Length: 124
Image 1 (cartoon, rainbow, N blue to C red):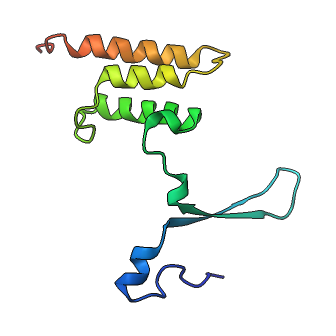
Image 2 (cartoon, rainbow, N blue to C red):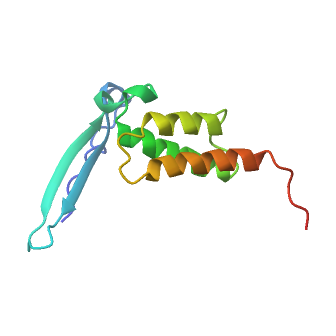
Image 3 (tube, rainbow, N blue to C red):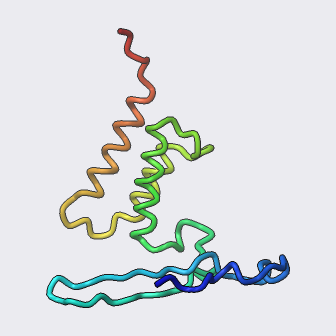
């Protein structure tokens, strides 16, 4: 039931260095009216890399903005010098059509969090 290891066969470091594959995705899905599942497989390679944010797909850029915002409001330990302004810029670049205004609302939420971050802490 379990496939052979894809990456565990090679024991030499030189084989690992030459590979441009980060991972191999296997996903099964089943349509509601179906009784059998369908398998999708694809390698995750260096060809899929996006070295700058502008070349990444719009959905990826927006998801990255949301994830970065989540990190910032939790204290920003992993965001280094990424700021609320960077999140706003990235979210706006990935706004697209925004039929229901959810992405604009997210951008407004980030602006509010940015202004709240400058307020002195509440004393209890």
